[in-house]
Length: 594
Image (tube, rainbow, N blue to C red; front, side):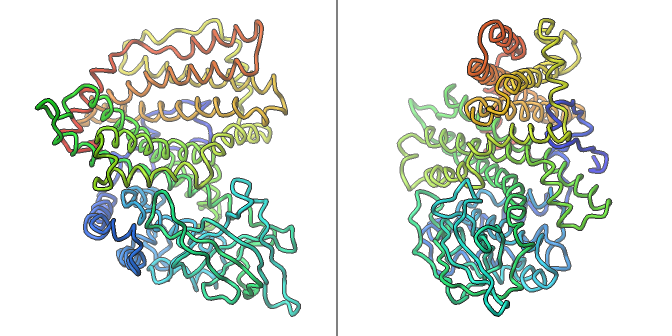
């Protein structure tokens, strides 16, 4: 399918509008060039990274920088950078695919993502032409390494509470920085830092700070639970003097840089965690096929099949939702470019349009890989607790993903917050559909009786959306301005939305594969139906918890009845479906959907 035939919907619009397979981009749409890039990434991991994981974790001097330079020589660091700055000029989907394909690289994947994401993009998208010419070609090649300095001891999720200060020198030629940053990835070897500080104590701004600048010093390497090979240090600024021309963007507009870059970072994190999850699945399947108990490979036991299948299902959902969103962003970027926006502004504008989806992807991707590595350790048994087996490294390395790029709690709270702000600005109509759902509450069909393929699942997804609209609408009406303080309600609603977004995405992919006669179409249908069947119970529980937190009396009884009806799913034998999925994973040695 040509990418241009796919239409994008407005950000967050999946909740109030139906999608079709014709408007859905899936991994089956990857072209030959993208598959060639994936093969190059796989070869790089197999030859350069995976054999050196122990040395990387020990932070062997020069190893990480050497690997980044080799990746830069292959064009992997600047895949999405414009060609005029030494990049490959690839589209957003391709650059996302690179992040996924290298996501199984453990600490290397973290260093690379920090370098070509938050370490480079602020300069690429907000820098002056002189700043871009000075830094981006060297960042693209790996000659220079980038880092991003936002977090402080007293400001993590609340980034705008930063205490690092900047002031203009008396001669007006320099900015003088004073303060401290913590948890700075790549700090041990980075050549250039994007640093956030408050100019004159109140104008949150960004600055480019070169390594070696007088007044910039570094703490010792942090001893972390996981991603041990990733350099993490504190930065200290003591009368750190930088040229005035190193101001990045506009004075007082640092939050625009920080938050817009985070939208892309959240999506790219989902890509990396999807790649890591696939790597962990391969490791676990290989072990389960060779480990015997009672003279039988444990991969043949039903309890193990259930775990292996659920790994596949969650990876499929993460991957599918990721590329559906990535293509929307690419199409929106093209639209904004045609309307006159520059390349950087167009991509940032497109990412902002889908900020809700990016927040969801960050949550679902990080929790997917956490599930996969956790069950991977369980399948390995006692061996999984030994450093001699790779799955233990995967387990330790995955935990950070639920914390950086905004904690999962913060991202969950942002989802409904962004929906409500957009509704108040007229960017999206939520209350109209929510009121319509309340009016039809008593006439909801259990599920479709249409005998067309996937008709029941299509109706189930539609009902999931009604459950969210009903609960969200009721919460807003009842709690009004106090809703922002009811974090438990907001998180339940977010969980409902995240599950529904994934459920619709996997269903559309399965339908599209069936329409194309794909050889794995039946297996994709097993995955989609199992995910939807289980999601119904999760959405039901979240909906009940949300309603019980804000409603009472007749209103509560009516809404609980609605939640029950909206989350019904047709009877489905998920056990046999999971067995088919697990058996196929064992046949191919891991994830089967390429």
